[in-house]
Image 1 (cartoon, rainbow, N blue to C red):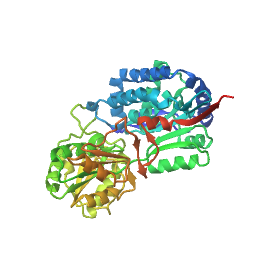
Image 2: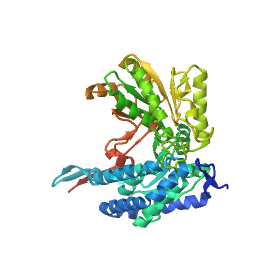
Image 3: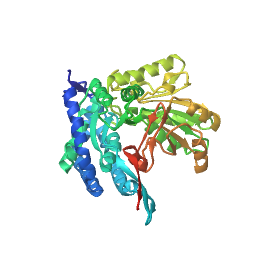
Image 4: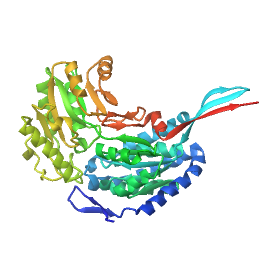
Length: 459
């Protein structure tokens, strides 16, 4: 068995190395989680909530260390301070709605009958977390799963090996029992073996389409619940009545923040012909205002991509598009830190179309294509011409117009005048190759619980 190495995008060094568990050790971890679940679920809800919130508070105490570790692990500049705003907001919201969401729904309570619907923890929840927002994506399932009375086994991406360790350290220090929340290091073969053996009752995976397909195959016939968020190619549409400066600022930030490594990042923009030239000019200026550099440097606003192989995918997409007639508007020489490896200059492409990979396949990097459209109908058709459906951003001055356009778009979330954002009160979901299932909102609790009906009769 080979060690799993975390290669830092900062300098290409081995930043961390861990041995994956053997199959026997992994099976034992899953068995411990199952054995501990009933006792954990029997604890009062208020106690579970308090322990989970205390775990997140302990995590906040590690902020300075975690922010620097994130820079080394996946390249996000330290100036952005980690993911704590979202972690705290999502934890607080899910904790606040837990009692109401998990409470039995009474149908009848009379002298003859008591009939109600309850929600019961599914059992053992397995989280397979990604590296791009490694704390946020874990918290989305970890918090409601534990609050609802499940035990959790977490397998983090090799690119962010230390994140799972920090989460376990924080939650255990707060009093969550070690067998209730376990961080494990697994290889693909062991992961698949556990899934096939029905070691878990619910699996939440965030990652690639191919990864999601592999998990579905492993789970086939086990009837294990799956939540799969498999990426996106999220569009922005700038209507003629849009606030141009606000649209440029938000959409370009949505396209290039975190080096474009966001599931709900903006990867393609459609602009009404009346605003197109001005939008493109401002978008290029916005991108050129970034500073590509070492993420540990406070002046860097754009760090390296998490791995040089991810950057190669983006470079290849750009090169293919240019060869097919696209026009790149940013000279990489403007960003001297671009080293042909993980450090990649941002790019804005025009004269693009949907025959190009850069407009159809997930890029997950600092590139965006911009197309001119004549009306809503053309924009809607182009936005729907995608294998993905996670979010769509519409720029207009009117709620009703945004809602009417949104109703015609095949996606999980419609934004008006914002992008690249998760509202914990709203369901995070997608369609098409983006996957299935949901997290956050009251529906996030439904993913990690099952309904149980009680029909009680007096005789």
